[in-house]
Length: 95
Image (cartoon, rainbow, N blue to C red):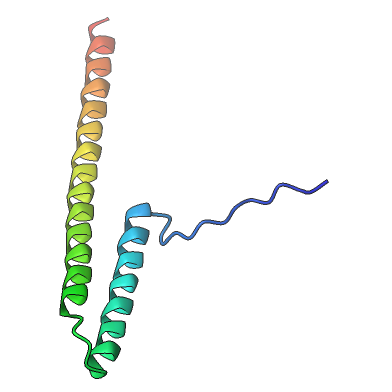
């Protein structure tokens, strides 16, 4: 019988968004470097390199918006907890 091995996942700071952005950045760097090498040999790769950088910029923007939303949602949760605590304190003091 084989023992169940825990599958190891590649994550940076145990955060999926950070991992996606860093992986995308590394991919874009690889595309740009490959484009520079091909450009040395006279191949026109400006469209490919431009698209790689556009994809990275778009993904970075999406992750930024998601981060802002997560912070807003966390703040809303904290405010709701504070309201609940103050409501419980008022109910206890009224008794």
